[in-house]
Length: 250
Image: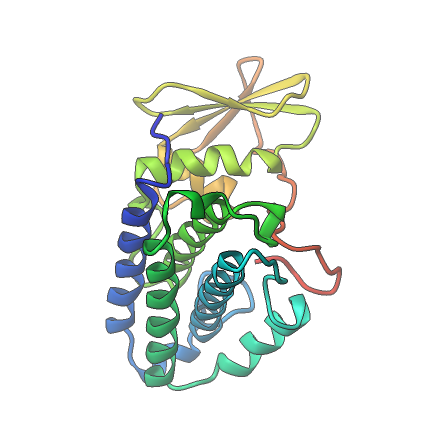
């Protein structure tokens, strides 16, 4: 299993940022208002969210450098939602400028870190700058797929999928223990419940399912005591900030 470290994460952030930039060039004006892979969100909503989370992470690092902490989003989750809704209908040129500027600034902030900077505390998940970098990696990679422009979960790298296995172990219901069996790779176990369920399939399909996305290769199968069963329901995505009941998690 590949471990992502402060030494290797910047390169992954650059790759993810490059993917988002390339996908922007595939869009035209009409595609902004078209549906994304996220229910209820257009591609404009996804782009607005990418810009927003990149700005939020850059802000986390700005305050961490001063030994301070600040909430993830200006105005909290309500502010996040309002900003996305306001920006969703912007023109392609405006989205491209906003996303590119925000993502470039966030990646540059991580590039500029010294060895000690990765351990500085931030508000996001009450964690460290390194946790924030991992979050930006997830956000850029997963939401690039959510744009529905031919860069689905099947393109996710092995290090990224294996990272999701660990991060999304929090979605396993307490009664279950999932034995993940990606084709051609060693199995991994997540969860500590008394009921074991084997989840078999291609690596990217397992990761997509755990991330609440549609597995694009159609290979998933769940078994319990050697019998086929339905894929179990997952717990919500681990929240980076306190959840607000009226705001669906994305």
